[in-house]
Amino acid sequence: MRHCLMAFTFPAPENDFDRRLIDGIRTHGWYVLKVPADEEGPSFAFTVGLWANYGHPEIIMVGLDLDLMHLVLNIAGDEVKTGHQRFEDGRQYRNSWRATIALLSESRRSISKEYLGTAMWLYRQQPFAALQCVWPDKQGLYPWQNGFNPEWRDLQPVLNTP
Image: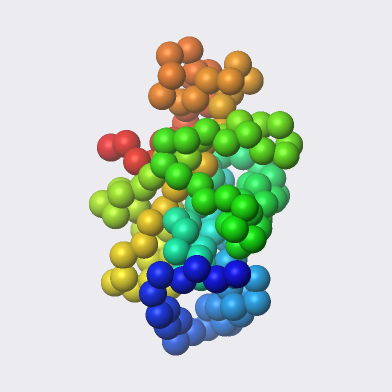
């Protein structure tokens, strides 16, 4: 079920990666990109295609195992695709693996090319929305709450803060 808000036209692919990305979005409705941790920062993964196909913000996760983030983002994508869920800014969601996640919106100003450069390439100058899926520490606290595990702050930066 597609809920596209706009008539979306894919950019011309420039290489094999672009072709795989576009084919994946056309086939499944979205694509999950995974970026391993390096000296610049923690690992992260994000969707590309939810906005084009369903008018739903792209979703990014930071700091967990890449395969786990891939799984979570695919579950979220399936829920969006089937119409069972539309994720919204500032809300918490309890999911099938018994974790509670929060979603925070990313303003266009705060969408960093370093995190969502591929989505920026796909959408070119067209505005798109993104949400960060934020996970709590073992005490159930989020990064913006007092008492959040300080060792996890660098692992999971909240992207919509300066």
